Image (cartoon, rainbow, N blue to C red):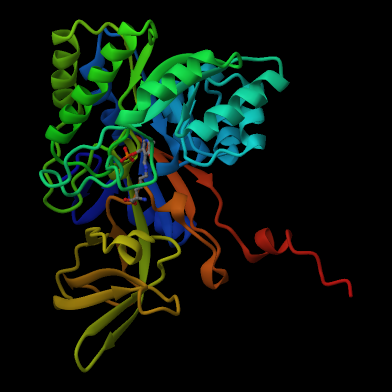
Length: 419
Ligand code: LLP
C-alpha cells in the first residue's frame, strides 16, 4: 500500500531499489528505511503547521539511528530526548541544542547537568521533586533551566480506552489539580525559567477526539496560569499519532493539526506550538528483511523459522503487536500455507507473526513491515545476538547507516576475569 515500498515485476522495492539486492549485499536481518517516506511523513506535519510558529521535535526514542536523525534534523526537526544517551546522539546529529526538549519521569542529576551545559531548549518536568533538583543543578552551574511542566490531562479512559499515559493512574506527568501549585513553585525558583506546558496522552492513537479533549484541558490551565500572571511561551502537545499496521485509520497529521489550530484560534492562543511525534514519522518508513531458515510442520501448527527474532523486533512479544509480513519476491510456485512465524530465540514468546498465510520456501526473504519505529531502538543482544544492520535508501542510492554488530563489539566491554 505504500508508494515507497511497492512491488515492481514481483520484486518488493524500497523507492528505486530491489530489497532482495540489499538483503544479498548486506545480509539479514536488515532494517531498510526509505528517506522519501520519512520526509513525506514529516511533510504532513509541516503542511498542517504552515505559517505558524512551531517546532516539531522528533521523539527519537522511536528510532535513534544517526542517519535518520540527520535526515529529520536537516529537514527542520528539533528532537525530543529522554536520556543522556539520546542527548549525545542528538548533539551528534547536528541539531540546534535549543531545539531539544528533554522528556521523562526520571532524569538523573548528571543528565540534567549535561543537558544544561549543552543549552537545550526545554526540560519537560514531570514532578515537584524534579523541579527542586533541576533548580539546584541549574544554580550550581550558574544557569537558569528552561522548563515546561508535563501535565496529566486525565482524559476519560472510558471513552478512549486505548490511551495509556494520560490517565491519573499512571506514572506520567503532574495531576491537573496540582498543576497550578507546581507552576507557582516553579515560578518562585530562581534556577528555573518557566517556558511552557506539555502533555502526552499515549501512543498509537487512531482518533482525534482524545487529542482535542487533552488540548482543551491544557488550554484551561494555560488560561488559569495567565490569570495568575504566569505567562507561557509554548504549548507542547507531545506525540502519539498512530500509523496503519493492519487496518487502523488514524487521522492524517495535517487534518488533525487543522483541528488543533482551530481550537487554539478559538481561544485566541498565540503560543508557539511544539509537537513530539515519533512513530508517525518513522514507523511506516522502515521494514526489516529476514531470511526463511526452516519450515517446520507441526502436529498443531506449521512453524516458519526466520533469522529475525524478538531481540530485533520486540513489539509482537511485548505487546502482541501486529506487523505485516510479505515476501520480497512473489513466488507463484510455492504453496500457500498458514504459519506461525517465529525467530530463533529460546523463548516461546519469540514470535513475529501468528496465523500468517505465506507462499514461501526455505532461503526466501521476507519483509516485516512497519518496522521503522520502536524496533531497532528497542532491539537487544539477548541470546548474544548482534543487533541488525540498517540501510537508508534515497531514490536509487542506498547507504549503510549502521553496521551489523558482531560479538566482539559487546565483548570489548567485558574485561577478562582477573582473580
Ligand atoms: N513524547 C513523549 C513524552 C513520549 O513518552 C512519547 C512516547 C512520544 C513523545 C512519542 O510518541 P509516538 O508519537 O511515538 O507515539 N514502545 C511502544 C511505544 C512507546 C511510546 C512511549 N512514549 C511501542 O512500540 O508501541
